[in-house]
Length: 496
Image (tube, rainbow, N blue to C red):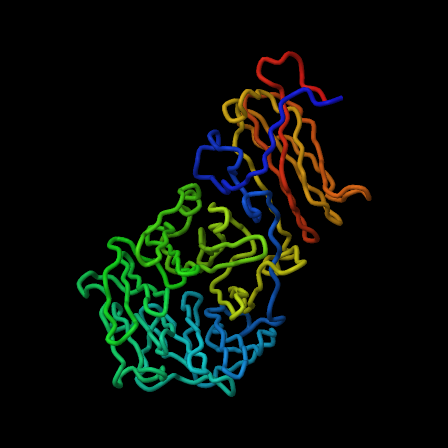
């Protein structure tokens, strides 16, 4: 018998995470809560994310904190991963996971908070970093032998980068508000003709340089705690102009460049972005999660861009408790919404190779590769590293459903899998997920897609549901959800 009721298809999930908004006022596109899911392009469904895997099979430096990840890319075609882990420097040829200790006589101060910038310049890997207020001496590695001090007149600076054939560095212990640059072609010469320095902002504003980001061949954004500047690097000496007052970046890894649009986290724990001209704000729908981030840990946020065939994310690894990052708050660049991951991204630092592959450094001497093909568990989590992904709706009421007062049936449309089950939970009138059932993800021999229905028992003026899956062996991909129910004023119960 045909269903005698109203059908409402939910096939738009672009609202993403909205835990900061009243759960009784969310639209069907918004989630009161979600975890470990990727919303598909244009919101046409969602899937559980894939797991991460270890790049190196054996922990570096007896399981010390990974403090920096970079790449040496030479003119001859060599591509090495260069890593700071504890008080040592390591490399892996072609990112093959076999780590070689190349520390030599280089002095590195161990400690999770002592982050490093490592980058290629003139056929060598250059590293700047260490403790924020007393940075270590920079190092250089040419691809053979051990690393060595950069030497010359190079500055011991907390951060550095290469641009327009020079090396720039910032935040020395003596000059925390100054940007320095080398002569052309020689990272170690910061005193010769063509080198120089510039105070960023005012020496009397009591702010330090917190980070920098190259946005084109001619421009660099330079951030202090509560102000932003633009440095023109087309010809020396490089002028610096004030861009935004009262808005800056909280840390050097809290800055991510996405094709010329620079996203950053402010000292107030807010995400903003700029292309060097306009300052943009973002929805407050995840402010409840940002409010959990410890103020003292904001400078150690680890941000990076993570892309796949069906998603494009900015991941912010943050700390809500303790002294390490334990949560990922994610901005979905495709669907323009927030998502979050409570597992799989407890990472200290990150880096990428020339192909855009992301490598995440943990607190355990391992480098992890996220979203690994055919991987359904996180190697970074305790055994078995099972990924739990879910979408939790808000409280659905008559005003949202347009004349539907009672949900009597819930149907999910999903992609078939070789194994596993999907959990469907629901509740009424403020009592969340009081009833739970499971449906198989395995299709029959004649099914091209799954259509699984659940008859709803119970009554109430508001209704909520949760679609979840937890497995170390398979993922979940939901295409749409159909809610079916009794129409306002209709006599009797809706029938199947």
